[in-house]
Image (cartoon, rainbow, N blue to C red; front, side, top):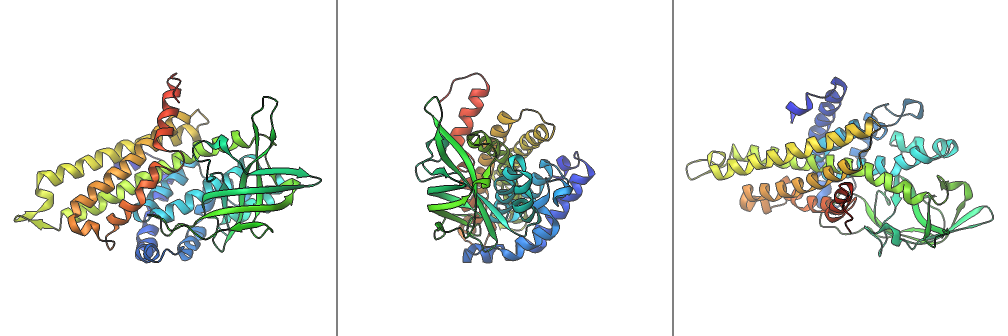
Length: 388
């Protein structure tokens, strides 16, 4: 990885190495415990807050670090090498918790809601997915109706990250607020603070992976919030969260690359220690070639997300490149996890080894932030193909 990292700015290199040290020294010793106990790593999150990671891409005048999106992606990659649950906690907190408020929030909303999120004092969540509306976000059924000076929200959300921790302060809810002149749904986003009557965080899911990541279904029953909690323009919610998803795909690609790299790191370590048939297994061509393929996949995926992040930070169109990065990155993570588990043999099936955790964790990367099938549709459309 370092040969590619060295092509970046000195600030980016320093950040990546600092977060790598934090991941090795702080995250690694507790990752297996939190995975086993399905517990949220509050002490790790506190450490990330003290480092300023939750404020990386935000301006200093708002309490941020004044960095760019590449900075955030580099931090996510380094954390994901060790623990994907920690990496997705940061990615979701910034990408869907803070970023929508930063992009379209009013100055009053930024002052009230955004600053605590940027500092890491609290976490925000984004309620988009519903039991019957995942990739097809236009199928939303949660409703918000404006009565006098309040929004009244009813509905349910599912698979919402960072929604039920003791430091979660809000969820931004995508809901149907009316009907457009063409008969389609008018979708808006509304900020709902935790603790609002009628807003219930349901029991956490028991997931295949990402055990230390906080994920809950949410229900809204006659939830009243002030009219000024409308985030952005009424009816612009769909466009706003599409932008959020595009940006998030780059971050998920970075997370995927970190997971893929973590599998390489562990496989190399094991291949240089484990002996079979009289020599180190890394000296067997079958193992050496498998690790070489892992390295090739990861290198290509890293370049893909670097390119997408560069385009985004340059103010250029990055939609197709984000989908490409997410597609190849998630596939690299899953393929590398599968290969690493094979290299470890029976030990790879034991939870005490981190490759087993990567094997469980990586599958969701091909699903969240738009499935691989959705990414292929978006890439095909960018080529002028009317794919559905």
